Amino acid sequence: MRRGRRGRRGRRRGREAQAENHERWLVSYADFITLLFAFFVMMYANSKTDQLKAQQIAASFRQAMSEGRLSQALARLVNPEAAKKQEAAKHAEAEVKKAEPGAAVELLPSLVELREKLKKEIEAGRLDVRMERRGLVISLREATFFPPGNDTVEASTYPTLETIAKELKRSPNPIRMEGHTDSVPIHTERFRSNWHLSAARGIAMMELFTSRFGFPPERIAIAGFAETAPVAGNDTAEGRARNRRVDIVVLNEEGMISEPARSGGGSHQAAASD
Image (cartoon, rainbow, N blue to C red; front, side, top):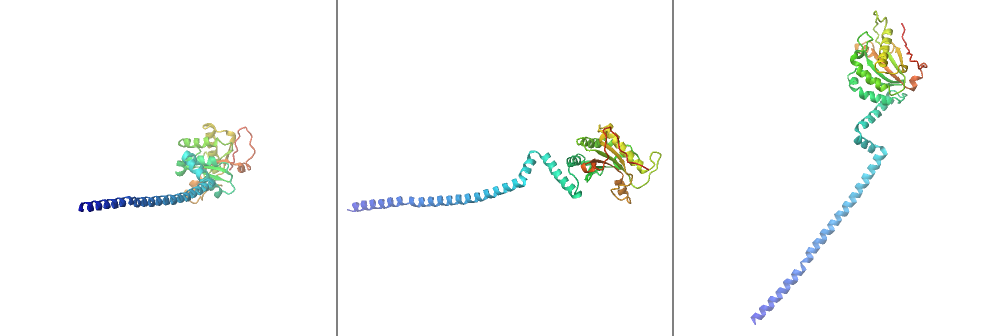
């Protein structure tokens, strides 16, 4: 009897344990569903965030396209040198319009090229390149290009002058070689006045350009201004040094208006007198 009771109790306990084991998977399943739900909630939230970011990126892209910033960035990546020149051209154009509101911009490419090629000389103060209303002006300082009181061009400056000549050959515009002095009078066996010295320096520069660098002589005119067109005061040594110069002027359309009619015979205008 005892054994029978024990057997029935054992079978009853086994059925209860088996029932309990069958119900445990519900807990794990519920946890899995909860985690899966949380996963999809996170994915949905991220998709909304990505849509917002995509809209922001699209808006930025459209703005960059409309303002040209994207094309500029691509240009800098593809051809950095060309991009630098383009930025230099824009800077030069803004500078010209600010300094000379009525100046034409037809000679801007030459201005940019010369400033780039003559950067060392400009920074050293040996010459200056600027745009005026009448055209492009390359101002050569006497201290670098001529001995004091002389019209012989220093041979050491030939490479610089050849660079200028090559660039100016690219345009058909007429050129003026203008000699300038300070207000200190000169009277030597060769030069009776500043008029003679300034005109002689313009002629010397013209002869160098035509004979050595092959520049077309029919495009050149000569002018001597003595001390009548200073760029600085003559009351200081620094000012007088700036005034002693030869200006190579590339005339634009507005500058050509005041020029006399030129024949193709290669004659040279000289504006010098006592």
